[in-house]
Image (spheres, rainbow, N blue to C red):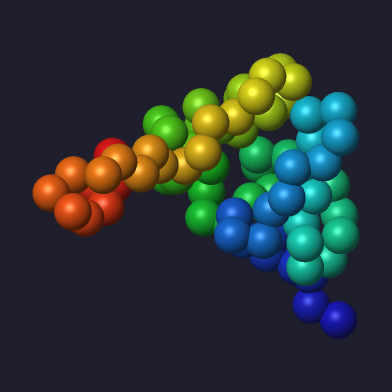
Length: 73
């Protein structure tokens, strides 16, 4: 059987600041995710670190009513 690539879209927050791959159910570290952790940007890194520290993680975007539509920040 091929190993799981632990794609970032498959990750779920697990207790105690850990991350779990929803595909294979393994706990993963930043070195094991795909694409490379360094390539995912500052926003992703901030959310990862906040969860590891046990702090609340804000939603990935803020939805605002603007001109009758939705503005993504």
